[in-house]
Length: 278
Length: 284
Ligand SMILES: Nc1ncnc2c1ncn2[C@@H]1O[C@H](COP(=O)(O)OP(=O)(O)OP(=O)(O)O)[C@@H](O)[C@H]1O
Ligand SMILES: [Mg+2]
Image 1: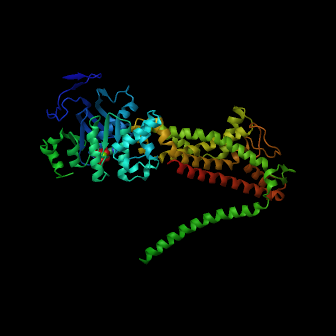
Image 2 (image 1 turned 45 degrees about the vertical axis):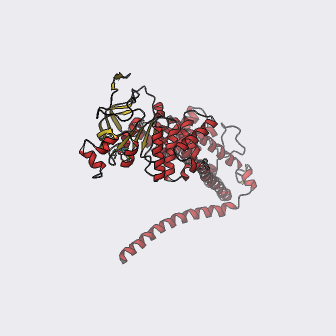
Image 3 (image 1 turned 90 degrees about the horizontal axis):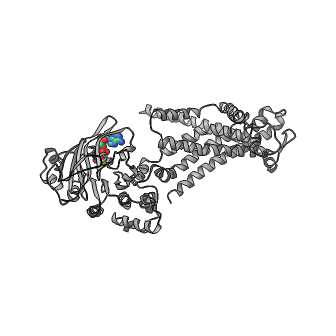
């Protein structure tokens, strides 16, 4: 089966073209469709001819050595790269069949629907409560009760509630690094995006908090489509359905996670995963 | 080894001497003005009109004049300067033209104040027919302060991390929302400080108000903004150089200088306090 999007690009509604095999989400649609995508910072190319599909309600792990373009790739989906001067891109990224580089597209809507947790956690210099409520407020929600409810729910989901429930009015800067990271996750969850981009969301977390966040990701998968960058191989193996291995701006291999970690088809992938370099 | 230590000793000695000379020069000026000016300060001096060809009486109209003119300056340069800075820093495309505009603004802050004064005469007094008045003088000083306000405000905006803007945008905020709720609250203290320092500089200027509204001698208060006025810096200039009995009015000149310095000191203190207060508040 194939569908024609409103931009006339044919999207194959069949299992991943790279492997011909599927993970557990046989029937899920393609949520994000990336075709021949190139990205440049000025003259230097950071992403080289990337093509891949991301299915609805799956977790895609992105792995690769430092500087290979993982964050750059992630920032393309909500067009955060647009805030950097001198960047250029070619190719298409479609979300639900709509090209996100379309001139008609409302970038504010896009970003509301594609939530992001940045690599460097960036709490705002506001109270813990206001940090989580921020996304709701800018989207016009004023109802106090709803805000309170939503903030609590998001903080609980991000496994932070118990640690902060008595000091929601305190500055977010008083939190520890790991707590700030979870605060940023809570902040992104509060606006209920359809896609969640997580750039090393557990890099500053202890094993317990990491486990909680991983559990959360597993839970969120039911509602969201998740793309997560991680340097932790075990984590990628544990939480992602598909794994993409990047190196020097190129997509080396993209497949079902179990395949990538047990029987990668490329030598470089195997070397990286087994820690022989990188 | 010995040599290196001697070199270091000499280096610090020279640096220390520099600091010492600067501070000494400032102290001498301040002490001189305080000792000679303090004697003429009393309630009458602050609250009465000048009398008998300014050889007696107070400087009340000059205080009021300087206050009003500075107010006009603030009303013009604060909103306009902050607006320009926000546009330049947050919205304008980062290209050659923006750089050129920014460079021009920086250069404008180096234009001698007398040039602003003459420009004010042509634009406000003659062309816009505002005559020599508080309004003309205030607007002239406002123009002169603008480059400082814009530059200081841009610096303040620059100090807000990009992560605050990006974080807001990523949550679906519009650019304006991100600026209003996540950039301005953290840059306004810096903007205000820079602006008030610019204003305090304007309050002490003579050249820009010389032809645009300041009067030599007016023993009454201005009734509206289109009246001429007396101002502290100009009054000081008159008392120190233009008066027919310079020796006799010297105490008044010193008193005026002291009042002007205290006034400007208060403005700067106010700037520091606002900054401090806003900084504390912003996290609540
Ligand atoms: N704002 C920028 N301007 C210019 N070059 C950039 C910028 N951001 C990243 N790069 C370059 O693009 C390449 C990819 O960077 P990116 O941040 O995407 O790597 P990464 O895979 O996320 O690395 P890490 O694992 O260390 O976070 C790097 O070579 C980097 O130097
Ligand atoms: Mg990165």
